[in-house]
Length: 217
Image (tube, rainbow, N blue to C red; front, side, top):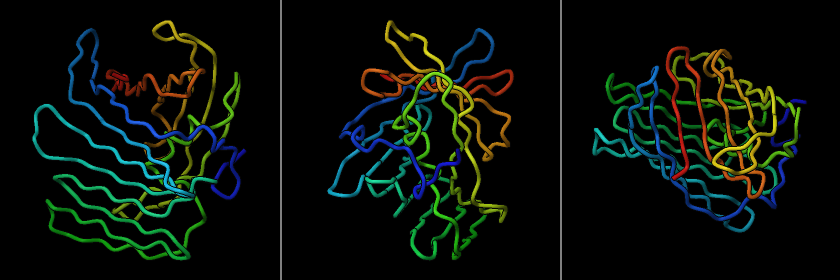
């Protein structure tokens, strides 16, 4: 099944106000290096949901902040902004999707103005996954909008390839295996999602010899 805001299985009752932190590290062989942490805030605001995330890297004092606004009923994107030391990006969704991508290194600004099928914003789809009706052997495809400054296709797919029951830190979780077209479909991400409250306890991105890991603090 291909899911989008117009055709989705999200359980909006699972969307709760919360603030959580994830420790960000990279593992290569037996060596693990902490890079920083990501602080995510989710706030219900009437019929909308506001999601903000801030990346704090240990080797940099510069901020990386993302803000996303979606409708609560179906997670239809309304607004997404992302600011960091290398680029600024803003997207306003509507009948036409408009925005810009400012590359601070190249000092170039690319504008976006087009009509696209209704899709989840790329910043949101990891959250979408945790609010799906997960069960063993569940699969789904998600239609995702990812602003691509190189001019390639902006509407892509993410794939829930496999869901299985396991345990993590003595908690019952679903191990949700996901790939997406944003990174070519060859990189697998494991989401360890609590069966009790749908919190994401761990994310592990397998990139060949290296793994990127997020662990809930």
